[in-house]
Image 1 (cartoon, rainbow, N blue to C red):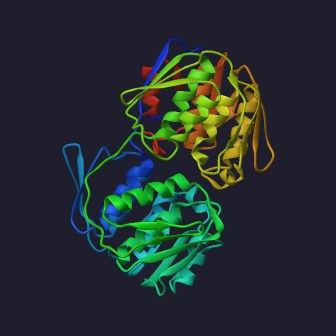
Image 2 (image 1 turned 90 degrees about the vertical axis):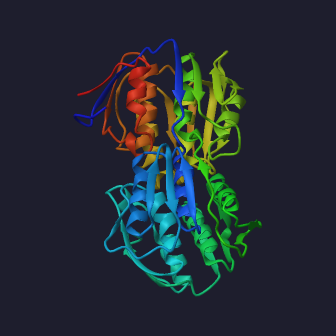
Image 3 (image 1 turned 60 degrees about the vertical axis):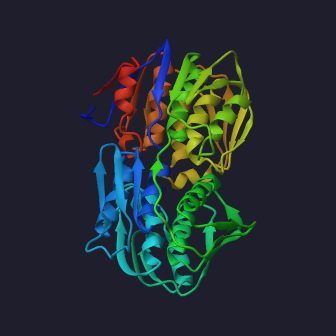
Length: 427
């Protein structure tokens, strides 16, 4: 579905049931490509996400001399030594591409300039600069924002101190970089803080798949000496991209079936337990997750430090809960693709929700009846998907400004919304 403008209109009153095929995990796709690229041999990856962010990683690997081909439903990655790219590495809006790939390339002699679109050029990379300086690598940016220039003759130390209080993407990048060195590498966490830990856990599991062990302590993570070997991956469904359709069971009272998820540890799988704790009836049937609302949900306090991408969905779910739901530790969302916590609060407030953001927590007093309104998605893919679903559940018509960004993570979303029966149109 092509956007003719950046304004969407959504008519409310969705009834019936929802069936949703979970798109491939963006997080798993990034990591399977990056780790396979520096493993010795050919790795096969089935079901790689076709979203804009993963496409940015594929383009970057091509610039660095890694052959990637497609055969049937598989992507074949011929691992080897990364080369300095001839031109700038354009990462689009993908902070994951920049923050994970820059350490991996810099682990050995190289030079690269990383840049991206307007949203990426607003996102911080100072934590990378600080880490590179400790390792004897030259790095510079524009006041802590991309473009980021990195000139390396290899790491001069096998230990680095990382500030992981705002993001963990660079932690994953340095873990993969450490595995590339073969002699071991140690990451010390500044103040023992590691946000978005489930994403680092995924990186550790995937390094183990490729034959490299790690050791996790309270304040550090050590990559043990070893050599990366090829591995054949099947990319699982993405929990964070399934969360917003899932919460429609809470908001609209309809039955929701999410297909293609794997009932095993994955980033943002926590959404299932959170919604159960709020009172939503959720059960598994094979790899299908079925959700039904059997009554009013209960408000609760939810620590979002490990799962920031769930916040838009959880804010929407909270509108159907009795009492005050607190989404805590969400302040760093202001440095995402948009000022995400502020935009969520403003948009849902216009739709009749009693919602407040105090700088670190979002508070939602429910239950609230959603009303159609004119709201701003801020060119943020996750907020836009949440507002489309909110508009489908609301009374009346919702106009969404600054829309058209969902291909960043979920290129099939608009088509699915139309297939579900939602009256969605560009104006």
